[in-house]
Amino acid sequence: MKLIRDVFLSTAALTMAATPAWADGHAETPSADTAQSERDKLFALFADADARQLALSPLSRLFRGDDKDADRLGDFLTDAQFLAGRTDTQLNLALLAQIDRDALSPTDQLAYDVFKYNQDQSMLGSTDEIRALTEVRPVNHFSGFHTFYPTFASGQGAAPFKTIENYEDNLSRHDDYIALTERAIAKFREGMESGVVETKLTIGNVIEQFNTQLAQPLEESQFMGPLKVFPEDFSDEDKARLTEAYTAKTQEIYAAHERMRDFLRDEYLAVAREEVGLSQMKGGDILYKQLIENSTTLPLTADYIHELGVSEVARVKAALDTLKTEVGFEGTLNEFFDYVRTDAQFKPESREALTQSYYDIGEEVDKKIGEYFSLLPKSELVIKPYDPAVEQFSAGGSYQPGTPDGSRPGTFYFNAYDLPSRLTTGNMTLYLHEGAPGHHFQISLAQENEALPAFMRFGGTTAFIEGWALYAETLGYEMGFFEDPWNRYGTLQDEQLRAMRLVVDTGLHAKGWSREKAIDFMLENSGMTRTEVVAEVERYIAIPSQALAYKIGALKIQELRAKAETELGDGFDIKEFHAQVLNTGGLPLPVLEAKIERWIAAGGN
Image 1: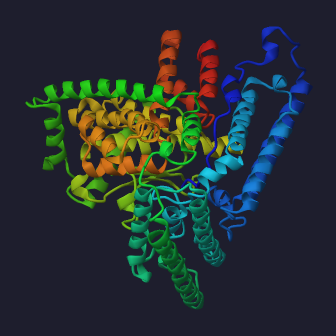
Image 2 (image 1 turned 45 degrees about the horizontal axis):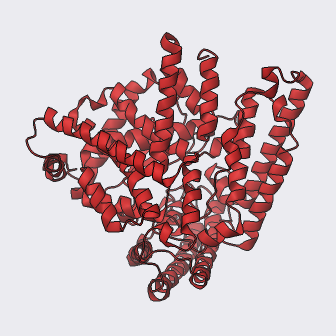
């Protein structure tokens, strides 16, 4: 779940020193007492900043498995919340400036640098100018509480339902959710007055999402889900009381959803913009430039990324052409794509068969994983389809983290909507990306590492997180999974997807591309089905720049691995490289690069 609060890259964060100043002979080595004193101050700041952040976000606390203040969802979209967050960030930067970075160990300098990077981004995202471009567009079909909260509150999400208090906390959170829905309508109205509005396309999709939710009979709603998982020790009286309370509160939620749906349909849709790109929104060109830096953690231009994408699309397309010859298909590449799109052998037979295929893949990966990783997560990985109420507008797959102690497993969700449009050729790659060793490994290992400060355990940059997951897909070659030409077809198609994202995202938001032009480009250069392409393009329209992070992050990790293999030679250990990449959380790419270069310089030890 991503709330509308964008944060942006500080140029200073890209020039962070890789070694302490005293290491090059220009200053005296600090004493052990000085180093310990500065370290104590640094980690005291980390703990204090984390406590203040959690006080502002009880939802974040719940995702960590801590139910303190669990009766609150949070004061999102309020002036008080916004100003408290900005004041918090200013305090963090002021306290950090009082700590002598040069006196810290290299490991602690890494933590210092990441913390400063995060706070700089938060400050840049807390300006009144950026707030005026983002907060007045609080909901689209890919980002909003209405897509996240039903599952969260269903008894099948992150919120606990083990005690009477848990159930009553959920009812209280429902009140916050209803209030948040009303505030979102008010924010949309502010945008109508300022001229900063969402697109007709995204708002049309949101209206359909609310229509789907409202069409569900009340008793089948996800909000009534906790009543189906009552603990055995609940009395009949408590069950009856809670059933009555949940029924009444769910009716209130339905009424709030109906008010939001009617407002968007009857008032907002008429003033929403026809054009889908940010460059065609008031202030959008400035916003997109900063979003690129935020997503990639690198100072890249839209033009550079666009041309890189064009080059990568051509390279992968050539590999697909070679595969076409290998399997003996006679015809053009697009005819080959059509063959795979339409042939029944590449379609799931049923939701159950699709689910079983992912179970089988998980077992295959588990047999190989120990050859490449010395660090393994404690948290179990479970596999589930999306709930039918949200699957139509969901991605092909996603990952929900478990708890740090492993008591709640991580979950790999896959999409079973419109089965005839789904291709089984990509199942292996999707599992490697969303499950193991992709998001499940990266996110779980970070949050399970109690030696890290909380902001490194539970935070991370999109470029690292998604770049790692895309890099994890490529390990399928070494593991032997892509010797099967149809699995390889699937992974090349997924690699092509990430390359096309560079072209299409920048095309839409910097070069004036229409939705139709973006769809045509992706259909022409890949074997994706139209259903898949439409969902992807509409995702890029809804969350500009996020899709750039995958390929940019993966290319950086691949570059660092190639450098390590070259310079370390026989001393290169793939398990140790992966441990170095994963054991300190989702770093900004410049910080990761400095870390790996230090590791190489130390001989890979």
